Each structure stands twice: as structure tokens, then as C-alpha cells.
Image (cartoon, rainbow, N blue to C red; front, top):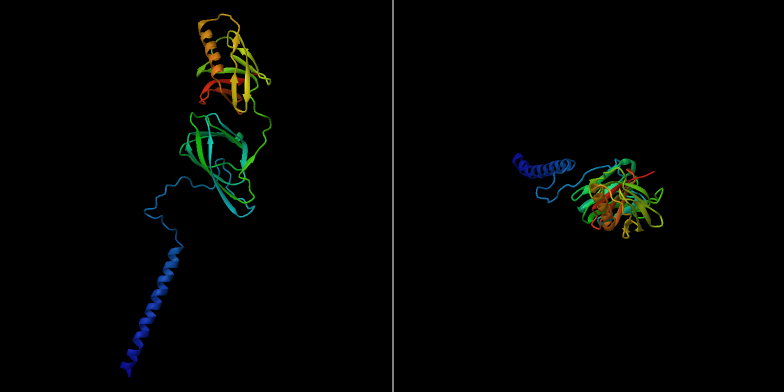
Amino acid sequence: MPARRAAMTAPWITVWVAVLTAVSLSCAAAQDATKPLAPPQNYPAQKLLSTGKTVVGETIHYPRTGPANVTAAIVTLPPGGTAFLHKHGAPLFAYILDGELTVDYGTHGKRTYRKGDALVEAMGVAHSSINNGTETMRLIGVYMGAQGTKDVIPVAATAPVTPAGRWQAQTIQGAPVTGDKPVALDLGQDGRVSGSGGCNSIGSRAAIKKNTITFGRPVSTLMACQPAVMEQERKFLDVLTKTRRWRIDMAQNTLTLLDKAGRALATFSRMP
């Protein structure tokens, strides 16, 4: 009788051992599932960015106007090209594919991003941008938004930005201005141009459209000055004939004239 009971009991012991083993393995698996998983050994990924804040220190927050909606776009700006003052209603991840981009965040300063840079753009801080480089800037932007949310929100500037006004040259073709008499440029709202090349008075006409500007053939008086001053004046008149774009730094209150490739030809400070 004991032998028969032992024979009947053995299979049940085997079953219970199998059940307990399975439960033990399941618990171990559940416990392991709570641990962070290590990245796969052969997963071909390179981390570009990991942050909870925008470039100006804002805490990233996602819109709740509706179901989630992700938009990806490639943004391009030619040399000297600008983007209007704006904000973002959704987090924007940006990666610079080519060229460079300088973004003006107002009181938060300026930053220049170049090929290979990754960032989360400012959201509530109004900003504008310009391509100061010599090649077309391209970036891929991913807006992590929601239906009903505006990814880009234009912001009205307090005053229209224009090169019209009185300016004094600080550099001409990369060299500091010299001489006793200032090199000055007076751009009228009607396109009239007057000023001084450092020796002679000059006059011309300008056609200004958005961020482009072209000067008509400049005329000047015929006074003679020191050779160095005359050479500087010649270069200044040459600058006017080659100028195709303009750029204003609102923080520094300066004007830069650029050629068609976006290279700086001359810089000016505003005159009272």
C-alpha cells in the first residue's frame, strides 16, 4: 500500500514543481520588466539631444488643444535671408542640415547654430532669425503639437525695421574707417541717398524691398584729399555699387550692407 501511494504521489509532485518553477520565472520576469532596458547592442542610433527645456530655459510643455499631431518640415534660408518675428505654440525640435542660422531672442541674446547642431527652439520668447553665412541654410524642424494649435505664431514688431535713416560707417570692406571726416550715409524713406565719402559729398537713389537694397550710380563732388582718404572713398563708392542686401542689428543699432552672396561690405552705426 505505501508503495502504491508513493507511485501515485510522484506525478503530482512533478506537476507542482513545474507550476512553482513557472510562477517563479514569471515573477522574476515581471521584476526584470521594471528595470530600465539597456539599449540594444547593435541598434544604429546616435543621440542628438536630450533635454526638458528650450534653448532659452523654458520648461517644455505640450499643447492640449486636441489630439496629438506631429509636423515635420525642411526650412531653407538663402544668404542674407531673414525670418519674421514669431513664437511657437508647440515644442519645436530643429536640426541644422546645412549652413548656419543666427537667431535673435531679444533680451535673451543671440545664438548662431551651424551644421550638425540640434536644439529645442524657444516657444514663448519671440525671436527672429537671419542667415549670415555664405551658403543656403537648411534645417529640419519637427513640431510636436496638437490639432488646433498653431506651430508658428507671427508677432507684430513694435516698429517696422527699415534701413532708412542717417548712418556713419565703421568699417568698409573689412577695414576700420580712418580720416578726420566721417563717412556717412543718409537713406531717405523716398529712396533719396546723400552723405559723405570722407572727402566728397555723394548722392544717389536706392530701391529698398524687404531685406534687399540696390543703389543707383553714385555721384560725388570733385574735391581732392589725402591719398588714403581718397582710396577709402573709392572703396565706399564701390560698396554702394555692389550692395544687394541689408541687415540691421536691433540690439547694437547697426546697419550692414551685403553683396549678393551675403558677404558683409560695410557696417554702420546709427547717427542721432
